[in-house]
Length: 396
Ligand code: HEC
Image (cartoon, rainbow, N blue to C red; front, side, top):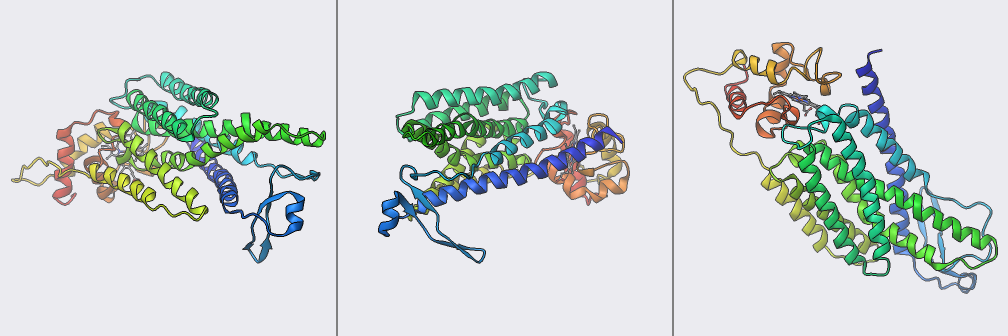
């Protein structure tokens, strides 16, 4: 079997798994946040006597549920206790391997572009991986330093760090690799929170209780700090992961700034939901998020495109064929040289195939300037104008 086909299959399988695990992780964590924020103090004296601090009733899937949260701990721990950790670990693992299959194995096309400061695939991969580790070390250091300080102060400082990282990565790598790595850095931090702090803390608490001692409250407090952070980081991470499918988002004139704005919009939206669970409606947060998003859309709208204006003669495929051969076929052909196989199955070997893709070509080359990918083949503005003219003349 052809190696490129194997990469394609691996990426399909890993992406599928990654999305499933992420749904399980985010789903369970959203559920517990909702639960925690929605609990009401019990009125039943039996529950109060048992040490229950909050409870609620819910109906779902034809059954009634009555979760109860203990203020400190139940007197007797049951033998079977459900833990939530593999959702997080498997999301990280599948994500890391997916990034390996796409970005690290094809760093020359995905991580580098005509303007990136780094131009060797090896250095790009190392930079990407170093970002994941550095991101965690800086975050963890900040958490320890600011353990008893206001969460808002922590949020502001960490946000500043992420924004700076975004600017640096947008300078060093291609826009899409930069956006993806900022997301992967935050996601790594979230999984590391679960692995290094939340789960070990819970284990210590359970061990203490099984030994008949009172667990030290610091474990619970640390776990809570990290888990609140994870909660605010989810939406920004999902945004970064999806940004890769929208070239205009990461290929604008100021990608670092765009990223900063959109991460803020995502966190503000999350804040709204957290308050809403408690019955507090602060619409100004999602409204601000939406305004920021709209600002990005408006500032990134394609400008009116210059055409070659040789109005005497229509531009046809005969004129742009040589440009396609020079600038596109290295990736989009039966036997591409720069990629293992033609991306998205788009090949320009025949004239019919070019014509059939004309609207997409116009969008990618003229409007978004997303193609050639990272302008690795050095397309000029004059050539883009010729594409614009060709499309205007009816893409014949
Ligand atoms: C260095 C490799 C490379 C070069 C050169 C390149 N492309 Fe692409 N192209 C890609 C990749 C990779 C994708 C898939 C994009 C993605 O996954 O976001 C793609 C996707 C596309 C798409 C599909 C977008 C969609 O919405 O499905 C079109 C159309 C396209 N390219 C046109 C072109 C044209 C026209 C040129 C030449 C001017 C060109 N490409 C040059 C790598 C390349």
